[in-house]
Image (tube, rainbow, N blue to C red; front, side, top):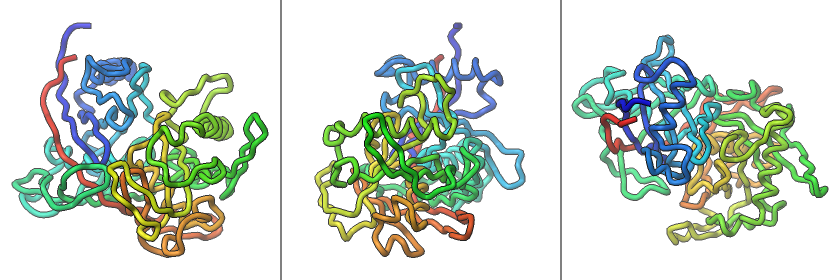
Amino acid sequence: MALCTIPCAIYRGGTSKGIMVRGRDLPADPTERDRILLRLFGSPDPRQIDGLGGATPTTSKLAIVEASSRLDADVDYTFGQVSIDEPYIDYRPNCGNISSAVGPFAVNSGLVDVQRDGIATVRIYNTNTDALIVAHFAVKDGRFAPGGDTSIAGVPGTGSPIYLDFFRIGGGVSGSLLPTGRRVDEVVIKDGRRFRVTVIDAGNLTVLMDAEELGLLGSEVREVDMKHAWPTIEWVRQQVGRMLGLYDEHEIVNPTTHALPKIALVHTPVAYQTTSGSAVEACAYDISARVLTMGRLHPTYAVTGAIALAVACKLPGTVAHDHVSELGKAPGMIRIGHPAGILEVGAEVEDDTVPRVTKVTLMRTARPLIAGMAWI
């Protein structure tokens, strides 16, 4: 392939980092597009040494952004989870953390006109999940203003807050908020053990498991403390995926190439120490949760996974509702305890005959790291 260049930028969005590109700068043919993007990231290679990828699931992420032709959106945004050791990009899920960088990137790239100073509002259509995300953030001199006093768990330093409202988020992958039609299902694995799960499609298609059934304490913050449960968790994840028809009958599935469904473990709040050594009391949050992404323990908590969890906490009968505090069951914010600290998410859920999500709200920070031309 001849040497060429492609305009791009690298942004931190929440606790993730991704490469941002405009749709117009990519080939229309999907095969050629992905070939160029894999070279941009340096995949497949465990170190992504010959590209710009960060060699971890949370830093090997892609956002394709372009002006939207929709009346309800300013930009269209397609997320890609770029496999590190396989030549594959998964376009089925979305990433809420990277979503927080889309509005600032759109403003800085000239895709959206905003006032010179104040609060900008950017309407983002996520093509992966057919959802609308509305971002509100500060601008100065017509550009995103990243500086501020807001901190989020898992990111050193502070920044300006970015408020995200997620609309139309139920059933983005499966077509239904509760894809199985039930709030709890039972999965039987090959050794005969049975596990209760809640399958919920909000933000991302997610399987929620009871951490106690796996012999976990809810205080684990490192992979080594949970490794004994990994094979069981992956078996359950794949069983649910096949039950929902996500994979072909004889398809070989592994965590690094098949990001969906996501899977998370929930537990009643317990006192624990974060990965940075800070003490968190049980009364400081509403539910303990750990989420896996591409077979790895997420260092914080994936935003789209937090959306699914927050919605499940509001629905009686789910695995999450069994473990969330009474405060978390009530209208308002839910405080999720994760390895790096606490994430707050607000979920408005109408629990009628067919439950419906009105809106999910959360706050992130983001920062542009570099912009320019990448050699391909």
